[in-house]
Length: 183
Image (cartoon, rainbow, N blue to C red):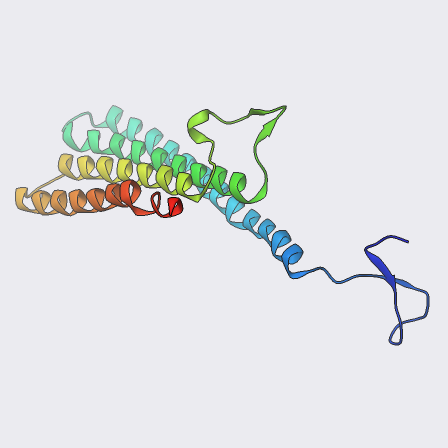
């Protein structure tokens, strides 16, 4: 008889096999497949950001062809496209990371299907990559705001705020959670 099966007694028909209840550890281990939901949502969101970025690019080119001057705000449109593509890439990196960490390694025959910089061994690797992309998006967004700026004081305040956020995220990646696992 299969070790995962046993004969029911009392409540069910005699001699009819029934699946033994899983242990709590097996149930928790199987629950990791729930991560498929955020992985799918992140991939779809990434696709949406790429499509939206492409649409903004096409419309920007049309606008530049129709009205080539002034140049300043046109540069901002292309920075917006870069921003959208970086956001899409960040979402895709998060999807790859969650999939690799919780569901299945993306490799066959010992060789990874991902570039080495995208392979993740733990949650700290995923956080570091996503935070790096967030810093990049913040920097591009700031440059976009500078290009479209009207007031110098507003940009100075925005730049200070972005710098504080970038410094905090950098400190978190550098000193935050990497040292705690060594104790």
